[in-house]
Amino acid sequence: MECMSDNLKKQKYYFYITPDLQYFAEDSPTGQKTEKGSDKKRSKAREDGDVLKSMEVNTVGILLAGFLALIFAGGFIFENLGKYFIFCVRNINFDFSDSAQLKILFVQALVALALTAGPVVGAVFISALLCNILQVGIIFTTKPFKIDFSKFNPVNGLKKIFTMKNIVEMLKSIGKIAVITYFPFRTIEKNFMTLLNTIKMPIIVGFQVIVDILTKIIWQILAALVIIAIIDYWYQWFTYEKKLKMSKYDVKKEREDSEGKPEVKRAQRKKMFEIMRGDMLKKLPEADVVITNPIHYAVALKYDVDGDSPPYVVAKGALKLALKIKEIAKENNIPIIENKPLARSLYAEVGVGEPIPDEFFTTVAEILAYVYKMKDKKF
Image (cartoon, rainbow, N blue to C red; front, side):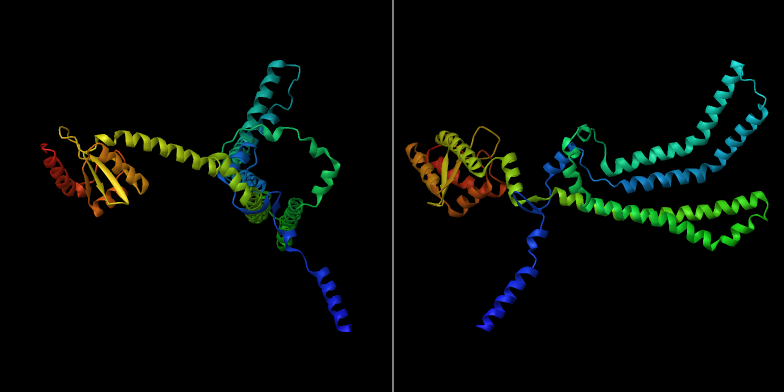
């Protein structure tokens, strides 16, 4: 009795500590999602504006493009800033009551702004455009802008606070803060004495040293952000593919919707076969000869003596249809020749209305010559 009690306690304990693995499965009302998303589902998601995209890739692309534009166009930018500065100094006693001079000053300010900001803004714009096109392609849809009032439900909002997506976004934010904090601190710490000595250096040399250190920091931050972007793109791809997954029932239902139910397709095939069979049997009396297996297959051939085309198959069938072909052939006095290899080959390789292949010419010619001799026809 004591042993039985211990076993019950163990079973009870086991019941409480054993997790149900089904809770970890990706399920839907139609079953567990184990199949890859179909092309139709992907197209529908794309139409709804639901596409694979990583904002981190866009961010890194924009930052990298802007920084490279500053490096390659830095001389041009500073040259134009210097010219505008000289222009401002020369016009320091400018009379704001003179509208003509005011217009000149305004135009010069716009030109200076375009020449200094243009390279960076242009590079950033092109980079943002390319990053989006490479990730998403060209897509036009207004569905993402439609108002979904369920998003304003505070209960649903509370449920979404602790979703995996929000946790990942929080980790990404922490990672970016750590990167932006760590690399400047580490680099400045290593070059602290060099930065202090810039006080003793000539202005141009000291400025160059500071620029070099800042450039090093920016490259370090960009390299770390590239790694974060790669990881984020992989995560976005993983979650996107997971979201598109379908259950076996979903795949079957989609196939039925696009192709029709199997029983309907069978009925359609049967109907088409009956129509084709009727047309085939109507033309059968025109045949010159029927070649049989003798009971499994029957192939009816026709040869136009006055034409240039080779003999062709008028009708063919197996089992019951073969018996029907032979029956019609007897009713119309069409010769029935038994040739097992030829009947099997013609049935397997030649469709109704198709000419016979070259390899059968000799055998068929001999059969037709024999048939025409029986009918006193010229071959």
